[in-house]
Structure formats: structure tokens, C-alpha cells
Amino acid sequence: MKNNINWNFDNTYSKLPESFREKINPVKVKDPKLILLNESLAKDLNLDFSQISQSKLSALFTGNELPENSNSIAQAYAGHQFGHFTMLGDGRAVLIGEHVSKNNHRYDIQFKGSGKTAFSRNGDGRAALGPMLREYVISEAMYALNIPTTRSLAVAKTGENVIRETQLEGAILTRVASSHIRVGTFQYIAARNKKDIIKIIEFML
Image 1 (spheres, one colour):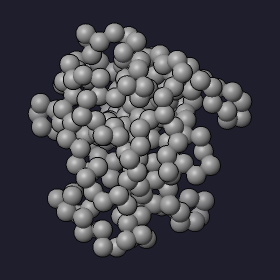
Image 2: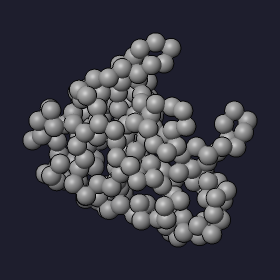
Image 3: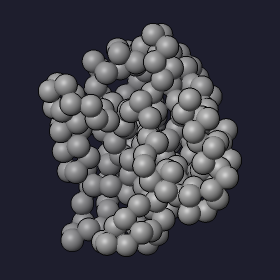
Image 4: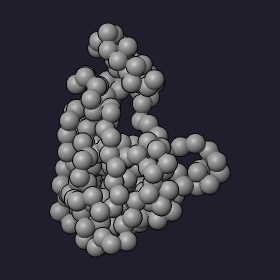
């Protein structure tokens, strides 16, 4: 997708060694349909979607089309789950790039529910519409309360069902954060290759 939206990608994390990430594109969906677009957040990001058709927006916010100069990856990290240390990583999330606003603020743009990655384990990499709408509402409510968190730019339906306890409508949430580096990022590198810890520290500085 050509850059008439004001995307301004500068993808520094993807330049780190391969042990930090998997290069992967979102899995394309059958029938994308945009449900919500956070116009206020878009303005803060200096993004202008006003001249983009609904079908193009739907394709963009499901990963069927990617912005020019994006560089999509799944990030690696580790942590404790169910009482055990495990290699986690972004099992159903793809970071499409780091957008730099006109105020020179850097934001990660991430799709949640965009398909399997190397970290999906036995999951399908997808998400249901209800939980994605709930995260959209809660994250924006927390922002309004001045509680630092990820924010939500858009929710789009995939036109496909996901199976949980029953069949549910599939959806993808577009999340925005200043960074997706976590404590687990350091845990992952410490467990795999301690020499790379210096590189992530240098990256953060």
C-alpha cells in the first residue's frame, strides 16, 4: 500500500540478530471488514485515512495489504506460564513496523490475531471478535485514566471463524505502543545466547 497515509517507518528492532525475531507476514484473510477505527489516535500518530476506501482500510488492518516500508516480524521473548519457564514469543502477533510521528515519537504498530508464528506452539494464531473489541475498549479507557498501556487503532473482522469453546467470528486488533520490549525479551536472550544481551541494551540506549 503506497504511503499516502503518512506512514513513516524506521524499523530498528528488525535490524537486531535473528535470535530476537522471526521475519513473517500476517496470514491473509478471506473477507476483511473494518469495524472500528480510532480517529483520535490516528491524528496523534499523524496518520490520515480520510482518502482511503473502506475496502483498502479493511485490507490494511487485516494484513492483506501492508504499508510501504513496513517490515513485519514476530518478536521473541520468554517467561513463566503455569508455573514453568517457557519460550513464549509473539504467538499470534506481528509487529509490522515502527512508525515515527511528526513529533519524532516512535510507535510500534502491531497486529494481534494475524496468524501463526514460530512462537504459536499449538495455537491457531487467530483471535475472536469479542475479546478484540473488549481490549480496544479497555485499553482506551485506561488511556483516558492516564494509565500507561498499549492503545488500539483499529479492529477488523477476518470473515473467518475461530474455534474456541464454540465457533466465533475472527478479528484482528491493531495495537500501538511505544515499545513491545518486555522483561521476557531479556529472559529469552539470556536462555539462548547471553552475548546478545549487550545488543538489546545498546538498542534501548
